[in-house]
Length: 122
Image 1 (cartoon, helix red, strand yellow):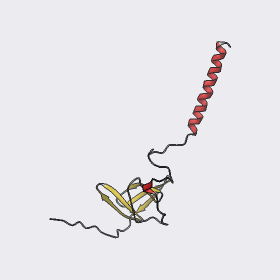
Image 2 (cartoon, helix red, strand yellow):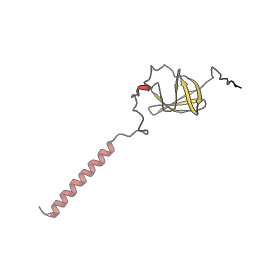
Image 3 (cartoon, one colour):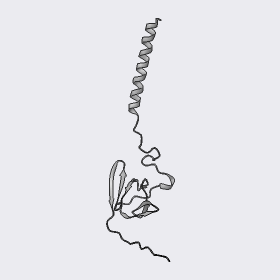
Image 4 (cartoon, rainbow, N blue to C red):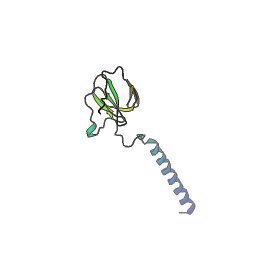
């Protein structure tokens, strides 16, 4: 086999392999933004969801040691937790944003049902 023919065959093989590699790369699924976040429907042992209530109710928002905590339908959650299958995206002063597979849901804190009193100790 002549050197020119060998180079043409080798060039054709390289082009085919590169094209196939680019096609394969285009078919890869999109990666999650947070590589440590479990896929939808998969939960850690400590974060297994309980039966989802018909309607989620934001009952309270409070701050403990600088971390905001939201009470949703009787359970406490922080940002990043899964609340009844929906990820708690953000906690604000009077509302919580839930991420339901890319769809945002806002829970608004209506009227508080209780007040917190701080007692001064001498």
